[in-house]
Amino acid sequence: LEADKPNMIATALSMQGHAAWLGAKAGPMIGLSRAAQRDNRASPGVRALAVQQEARGIALTGEAEIADIDRKFDQAEKLAAQAAEAPGDEPPWIYFFSRDYLILQRGLAYRLTGDYAKANELLTAGLSAMPSDLRQADWVASRYLLQLAVNHAKSGEVDTACALAQEINIIARQTYSEALRAAVISFHMRLSQKWPGNPHVAELGEAIR
Image (cartoon, rainbow, N blue to C red; front, side, top):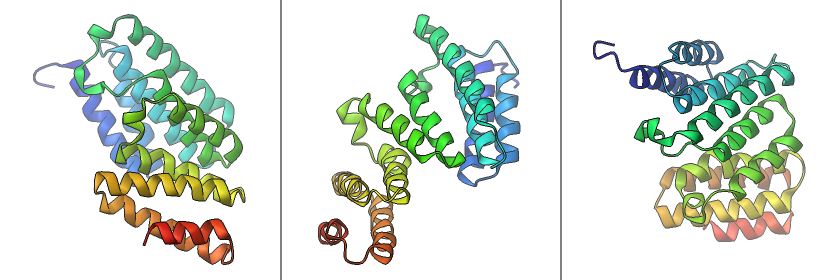
């Protein structure tokens, strides 16, 4: 604030909103995301990140209308298009941001509404558009691949859920991520309890030993 750097101020507020997302606190997440959008001097990309985060916060309330969520994501899409027209005006710390990223975030929002089919469609599309090296990152596996696997399990698609868990397990080993490996083990335990005799679940169990 003292330096009067709009992008940094908006990002700081947005990251506080992200902390609220990690704690599943919808109110602070929405409020902080809205605060991050107030200064129009902030770049379109920075504001787009705040808008899509607000949309996920709205979904997190459990009382959201799909139309309200879509309206916010459509707004984020327009800002992302503006950012793509002048990438040099964007701060370097949002290097990961793209329109494909918005597809993934919209998928997370749809998951919160219980529309697993649409969420799976969006998450699959976003992951398919990612460069192969980025898809192998542990944060991609924990944020998106794991959520996609859980969605398929909730839909009863055990074979697909296990195939995704196998991919996550490989990433966990390659990146030496103990947290990711623990998440796969926990997921396998839940699958084993619900489908104790399923061969795909048994194969996953062998892989994670």
